[in-house]
Length: 351
Image (cartoon, rainbow, N blue to C red; front, top):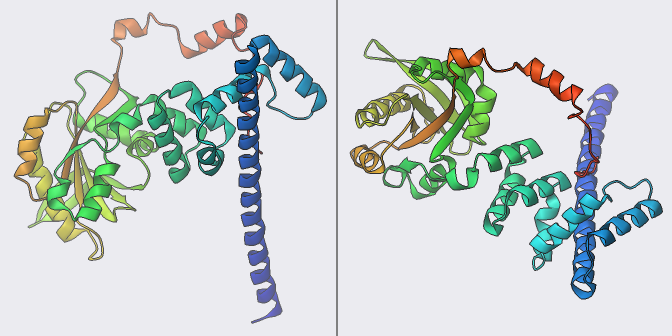
């Protein structure tokens, strides 16, 4: 190997080592910051309980700390209140705070404190955020779309048609309903219009589907016995290691949909999937479904199929569209009335 090649190899090794060290340092500093905030909140809670301190004491603490540490961010009265709330929420779980919560940036934690009251749900979102590397915006999206109550709740026959280790994971992947409110459609929109909307907003759709989905194509052509058939949407799931066929229906679920999906899955398994792939899985998205009808329809299928509902944003009637202000008009109004004033940054994160 030449000197130049040796140098390039060394440089790549050093770059990787530096990047790894910087990530570890970032995580360590973040963990220390979150731990510090928990301790500050704990001290405030204890003194409030012992001496009956009120909010004015928090304002005084904030003022004195910012005077002592003028370059340190995150010492505003409002952020101290968050620290207090944080310590109260995890007052018996300091070990959990160090091992799990401290892996999240402070901005994530404050949003969880604001938006999730139930302890079990809060812990679920914490673990999912760490597992999937959700950004703050993604976390907020999943909280506001009530992912906790939807995840893993699709009506399926997976347990009867998949090996146990795969059926459990597959059940976890699919939701009881999908939030497609990033689409604005007419009440009587056709299936192709819904499909085109999903393709146009594929990033939003992938976010709603969840981690692991790779988009393979729309109106995916299958040729069986010299006849052409077209799948609405085809995905590949990296954790399940299988193709996922998604069919979209604008009305309620009817049993015939399960038979058609079974045909598509058989065709994909025979014509598309690699021998090392697992059996393909189908998901039928309908505007509504009745549990007992879905259950009976899936009992008769030997292919793994799930059925879920979805919600979209209904387009306004034309006569109302013209009566409402435009986005530009709203922005002008807000700027004239001082609605864009900034507040102190309370979501301090390690840079």
